Image 1: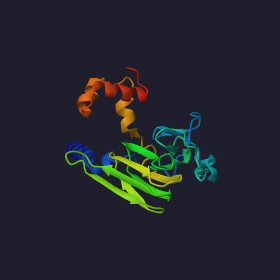
Image 2 (image 1 turned 30 degrees about the vertical axis):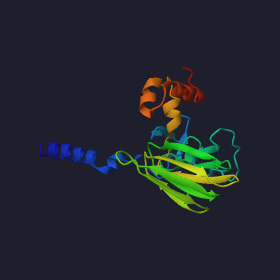
Image 3 (image 1 turned 90 degrees about the horizontal axis):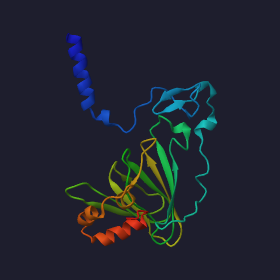
Image 4 (image 1 turned 90 degrees about the vertical axis):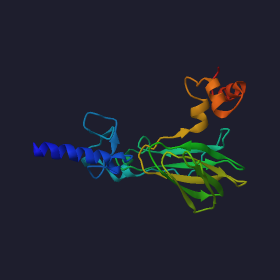
Length: 224
């Protein structure tokens, strides 16, 4: 009976520990290169592992992030995401990254958050204005102008943004503590949800006329 009580107490303690809320579970092996073939793999962290005897150095290489990406959208950025889906060697390693190409004169990675990871943003080329806003009740803006080589950290689950201040294209790299950090763009989620949020709800929340909300929803793909 004492053993049972000890086990129950241990489980409760582990559940209350901050470690229980880590973004990704810790690996139980050196690596787990993800594969889609279920015939000769082991299922770990939502992916099947490649047989370690078949793994090569090529499984741990991702190339092409030095190549500029075209920018063809209204916000002025192109994101090249490298997570476990694009780079199977990242599976179970709790890391991911993204290259962000910014258009001149205000190209931006608009306000967004990552539900499963903190982010370190590094300026590869250009000058940026970046910042994040804390949660209620303060909603404090922490912001900074960054130059080449500078880094800035964005806490997990906090709304943040990056804007190109220069007159030429700029490049930044973002690094995450999760193999799948996720991204929620605030405007897309609020005004572009499917099905759409009732415009009268958003009108009161943002203190706007309902017709203004409807027009914004149309721009984000919702026809009300």
